[in-house]
Length: 98
Image (tube, rainbow, N blue to C red; front, side, top):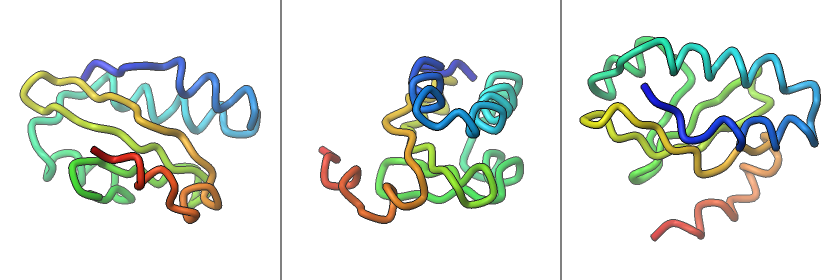
């Protein structure tokens, strides 16, 4: 899949340096695979959930959340937000949905 964009991961990691390795490991798995549907994605990422049209990845042992919009037909994943667990729990990211 094509990831749009790694800069969101890099920017988050600049404020949370301990997240760098786990975020880049997640990116590598995304970019090395072609997920055709939700089932294939769920088989690879056990800690992933749907929230409306968005997909929420729980990464780093429950420390971080990657919120993304996935277009399986185009093989593109758009990162909407990268958050700490606490930021995610506040729920403000979800208010921005269209």
